[in-house]
Length: 268
Image 1 (cartoon, rainbow, N blue to C red):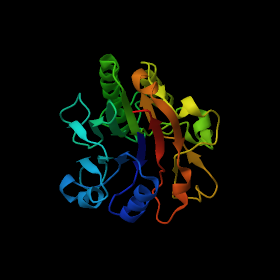
Image 2 (image 1 turned 90 degrees about the vertical axis):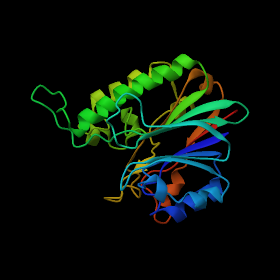
Image 3 (image 1 turned 120 degrees about the horizontal axis):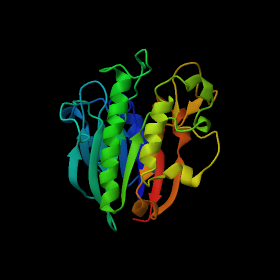
């Protein structure tokens, strides 16, 4: 089973780029972020005609996540548990039925900028950085639940986290950014340390591997990128992993997203 996560940065704005990619690369499952569409306006017929089952969790104008699967989907849930007042569409999960059942969680973790801090260095309550860290606390709780089930499961998507200095071309430029601030990285590591495998780093070490290049300042041409799209696998899922890679060439196509797909291949 080949699964890709892809922040498409607007499904309607990039419908041609997305359908071309699906035709050429043919993932069994695609987890999409930033669909920027309410559910009823999502162009599901386009993808259903391509053989995909479609599940979305959208909102108008920004955020939004989706699952496209050539395999049956069961037990679909929407919204990260832990805060019933959270109206941002950033989480969707479902069970994919292949050779065995696999629980997949697609996420679009909050960016967190601008970072607003109190005089003591704590995040300002109600600010975007506080929301990011609170969301990651809820993610930790859901990750604990997935680990406790002791079944194949993964959490994948745009984490908006640069885990290590080697995950940025210019790491010093990101030290005060919400994506690479120490509390952000600590929150990510806390989740990984529950026993998850970070798919890409289990297969590829070293610098120079990125999944996002800004539209500004010729970032793509300079390879001035960051790696913020990740797969986290439970031990039972990690045992199935055959490979994990970044499809970076997609960034050089016409009217691209600023992200590229990240892939995992599972014996499932």
